[in-house]
Length: 120
Image (cartoon, rainbow, N blue to C red; front, top):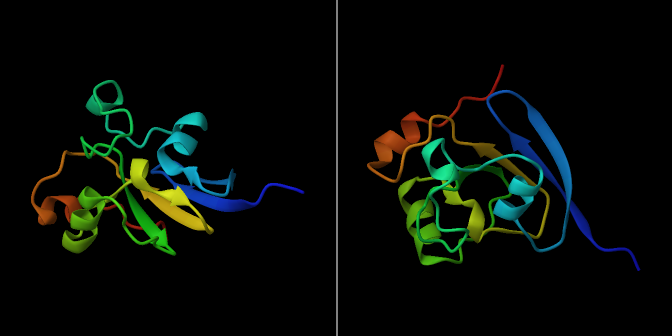
């Protein structure tokens, strides 16, 4: 029996990629394995390794937003911050947008200001 997979669309400032990922795959790991870093320039080396502690792997969920499970992700969803890629399991088709010029968590206005606008 074939393993169930889902399409993951990743929107970066440079391009849009579509990946086929296994059911339940961790979004952060999938991105890193594909050579796409969900981290900002500084946090590529200094991050918590996917434990949901540093908030440096935030991505915008563009479609079919999964319900937040982790406390940090619940706060982010409630206040308009990017969601933590390390705390998302891909269980359905998903579209995410990387955060360009990433900053650490701060005021919601700052997080929203850095949200990339869709290409027209």
